[in-house]
Amino acid sequence: MQPVEFQGFAGDCTISGKITMFGERLTDFLNGQERFRLHKVEFQSLEDGRYVAEDSVSIARDDLLAVMGTGPRGDEKRRVSLEEARMQLAIGPYIILGRLHVAPGQDPMRNVLQREPMIPFTGVTMAYSVAGKVVARDLETIIVNRHLVEWITEPGEDAVLFPEASIRSPFSMNMRKDFTGPSTL
Image (cartoon, rainbow, N blue to C red; front, side):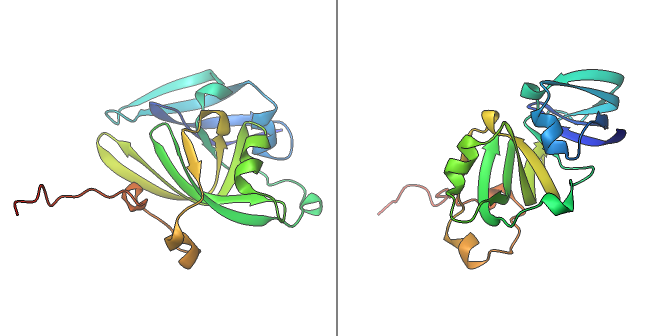
């Protein structure tokens, strides 16, 4: 039981601080608690970028959209071989592309619906806006609150053709707009 770095993502801010974790993995800890005590906390507003510091706060799991994976990874002897499925999702103001780990032959979408609330994704690119500026971050692991996900899908053909390519912008997600205007012919 030791404090580990905490980086969380809420609907209106990012949250940095320390959390005293019980157990082997952050995902298991988050799934086993409905509230968490954070220490030496700093909130950054997504709207204007300003920071607010607090010595200690209690946060409900339902207020967290995602948490960056930190701390120990659990007992290596207990790990099983899993397949990776590239997924993209939107949760609040965040767009996430990452790899979901599922048992061989299991449908990734069905897997998401059957899991506990907090689900880890690895090899993540996450994009969001702070004070009107797009922030894109490559993260090793992000733990997403599946109850708050707005949409989730398997990426399109481009991701299949280039499975190791990171997507570094929310604008690369097959969102197209016709800027040519109405035809004058």
